[in-house]
Length: 430
Image (cartoon, rainbow, N blue to C red; front, side, top):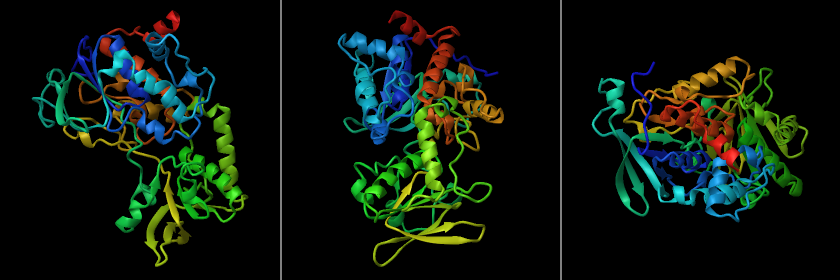
């Protein structure tokens, strides 16, 4: 049992780090309850969503929006026309038609600080190593140091921190075990990472090239399927897709340990089935290889890259390539919270409370959906909460629906009302 009380009445100051889907929705929820809100992002509103803006979401709009958000948009503009509930939007459509307008509503807009990187978060009077009771530490305000494009360095204080920074800015390594390959700094800098739009904006960068794709999850599968369309239009384009080996040593997709709702969608099944076909080695121009990772990268005199893959304990395989794409997933970044005391899972690097809940689901064979109560969101740093994909650490399967559930549970905890549910209230009023 925690030795501090999580209940904090409005108007307290809630600082939310990350203006993505969960950060914006959390800001709206807090403002409806009367809290003062500061919403920070190192880029622009929904910036990370726009990075994968070319990709169609695997779940419909109704699963990625809230009744409270729709109510706020209609209150702001009675002529607002939201996307249809069953529409499968691209990331760009989701950002421009819902998230950005939501951040511009009167309730949130004055507290939004874009291009404002959080340098550090600490307590005002209490050091990390101070052995003080939790309630005393909880009563000490947070101090945020912000590096803003418009204001330069400045500080702010808050009673509650909600960290929704996600994982997309911290890609995992492509070497064995998620490490860094032996390579020059120039070669490492040329590795592309993230949801690369190989069939659209980045098509010219892969057309007619030998592309090495490293990854075993959904992002790698999405890129591989897109690469197939490029290859079909230009037979000089080649793809080597490197995944982790299955038990029988063959290339495989990483199992989705959670996210049952996602697995039930038609779009997910289509992506998985097409990816498995590509990994079967039956598609011309696509070479699947099972390896533990890229051991090293070397440059030839002609400017090509030689990737040395670790395919056995001491067995390697070399592949020539022009482009290296890392789609190995991401990990949380905790640099700005080093002055705080946040216990993290040794495996996923997520906060220990949510990590424990996810571990229980995994042991249960993913039979249950992810669900949280407010107490599972509590961290070892009083009044510091982690929501969204970062709460899952480097694990997979997070859905925006999960984040909305986290928001509802968190403010029920903070407000001291287990029955507090603004989403249900907003739905009944619409």
